[in-house]
Amino acid sequence: MKQLLVTQFPMQWMTLVALLIFLTVFVGIALWTFRIVRREKWEQIAARAILEHEPLPLRPTSETCPEQESAR
Image (tube, rainbow, N blue to C red):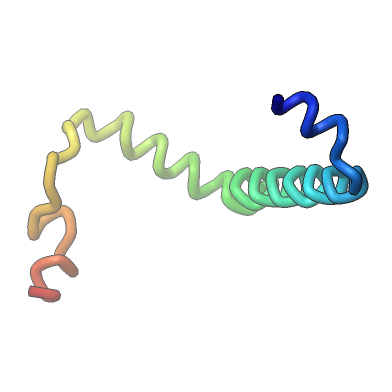
């Protein structure tokens, strides 16, 4: 049923445009996330996680997230 519907779809250009939009957004988000400028920040985060050896708390506390306490 689905295959028949896809083969009989009259506007194939719409499918192509949707695919191009999806790929453009996907590549854009990937490049934005892993851009070179952020590499230093990612290295700092990775080093902090390795050096601290402390498990993260299950819920935010006043020590880990002070802005949570001030919002209450």
